[in-house]
Image (cartoon, rainbow, N blue to C red; front, side, top):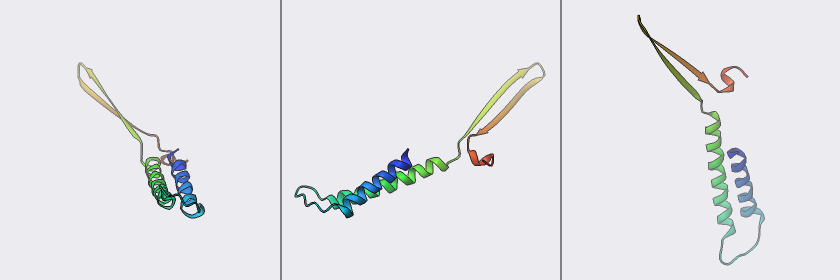
Length: 85
C-alpha cells in the first residue's frame, strides 16, 4: 500500500510541477508539486524498507521436571525468500 501511495504522490506532484500551467496568486503550484514528489519518494523508500526487512519471531518454552529444567527455543521466519519461493 505504501509503495503505491508513494508512486501516486510522485505522479501527482510531477503533474503539478511540470504539466499544469495555471497561475494562482496565493499558492505556487510548482512548489507544491516538488513537495509532493519528495514526499512520494520518501514514502516509496519507507515502503521498500518495510517490505524488505526480515520478520522473525522467537518462542521460548521452559519445562520443569524432577530431573531438572528443559528449555526449548523455536524461531520462525515469515520471509518468503528464505524458503526459496
